[in-house]
Amino acid sequence: MKAYGYKKDDEELAELQEVSIQGSLEELDKIIDFLINVKKLHSNISDETELCHSHLRDWDKDWKNGEMDFIVVTNFRKL
Image 1 (cartoon, rainbow, N blue to C red):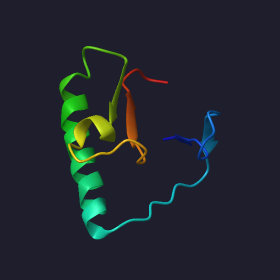
Image 2 (spheres, rainbow, N blue to C red):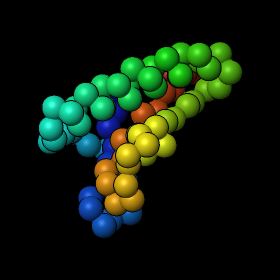
Image 3 (cartoon, rainbow, N blue to C red):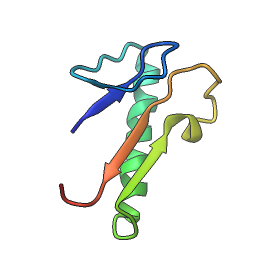
């Protein structure tokens, strides 16, 4: 598993060594629900594509522009 991210107001993607998430219990529940949903969605299409990605901003009806996005990328082909 790899993690990638951007510094605030920067467009250069960097591989991360560590990921920290700071938020409320409600926000943590929202990310857990998102990950469960993504696992189901990606599992249903694993035979149809080599790669799939989902954005929290597309899934969360309360997401506001400028908030952090959380993107899950699933690679189905063996590396």
